[in-house]
Length: 284
Image 1 (spheres, helix red, strand yellow):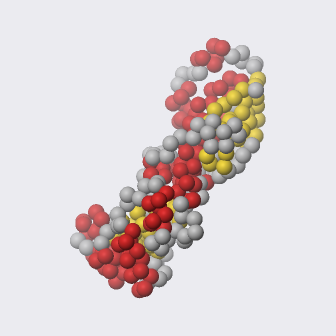
Image 2 (tube, helix red, strand yellow):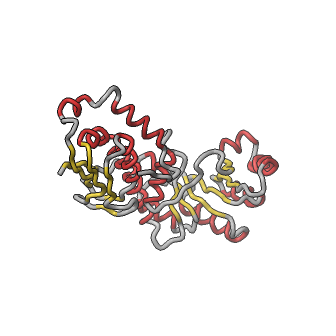
Image 3 (cartoon, one colour):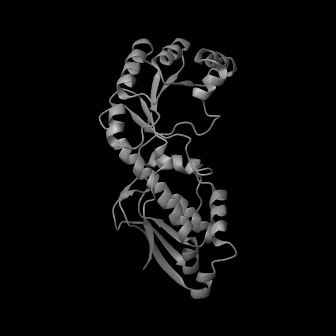
């Protein structure tokens, strides 16, 4: 079974297996006959949003390509306690050897998807979209951002080469928003979008004068944020407005931010505070 999704990093999975297996799964080799076969099912121990099933399949495929793997749910589906999401048939040794790595990926990604879905639900009835940040686990960014999408969120930049986002330290190093944007426009091609982080109304005015594509309202209370949105919409209605900074995953706070009229709410906590969804492997 071969997968072509670009977010599946076969090398990452191979390294994860090597880390876990080391010189060999000595317990399984000692207890389980080499010729033994089994059917095992991945089952939800708690409710949530499932994500990472194709990763789990790839884990077991790398352990033993002869295993038969059957998806019983699709990524992005809501799961309840007791729901079976994946069935594995074949070598009992291979199933056991791949179990922990497969469940680690599934639990981690499902946790992110589940938390994202809760945050998305808090914006219902507004135009705001929940997006992630670059606050991801090193080496797992593509997977974690995929999980955000499975939870109904959207992705911000994947990396520093993905767009110009002028933040407070860029402004400090350049001297001002005007200086930073002017220099950036001199080096950016016409298709590259530019966003500026603002934490005061004066900075919002300056960013509007410079004609950037997007303005990030950083750590503003909802009343100030609403004023900024009104100002931006009045002068440049096409400008994308993002809220960020200290928003967290409290649905009441997310709802208050969404009600200000922003387009995007970026939340680093989607990927750096999500807890694992508990899934287990049951042998028939």
